[in-house]
Image 1: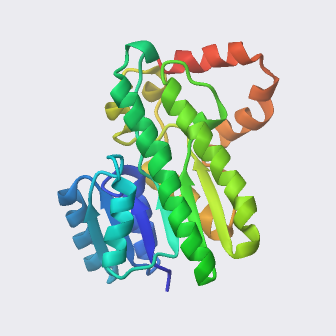
Image 2: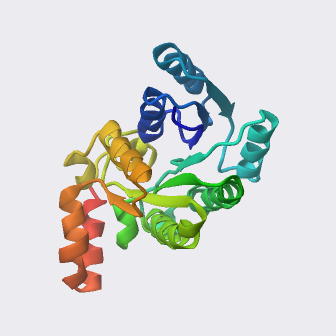
Length: 258
């Protein structure tokens, strides 16, 4: 039977698909996100379909002390997840200097601060308990610089770098760290980030299930990095490094605009 997994941002999109995939393989789950009603519906679905146990913790992970509150809530339930899937995050499009600085800081708080807090805590527990797996959802954006989504791209740069460094640190301690780097995925992300008219979005993207499955399987195999879009993977590894940096940044910026 699969081990207990803690999944953040589980109410929709890729996070919900991670929960479905893990439950289908017989694993219990701890589901967390802000929307308690959506989590409750997912809990009912998973328990009825797969005969597993789903625990629901509804909270705002990006709020001050949100990650600590989640850790405390999990401890109160007497649970010790051996799999951590850090999926929660959001983006926001526009000129950085005209965007609300509170929104930019909230993005950093969720995409970076909460992820680091949870990873630090549960990685220590996993090492003490003899092993575990961590899957952090980064992005192909994390290999690039992103005009008109400057803070979002920067947060994913952090996630990609942080995850790969920790994978080396923890590799001899029984804990693997995988970063999933999808391209554009058709979820609520575009609407939340005000990107529905962007060229990138209009070109279409992967399904949440396909992205989640690629990341989940990479986690199980202990891979450090999984770029789930093969074409983007080729471009990132073999084409983009040869382009002048400013030219590449301008090209990326154009995809974020209508």
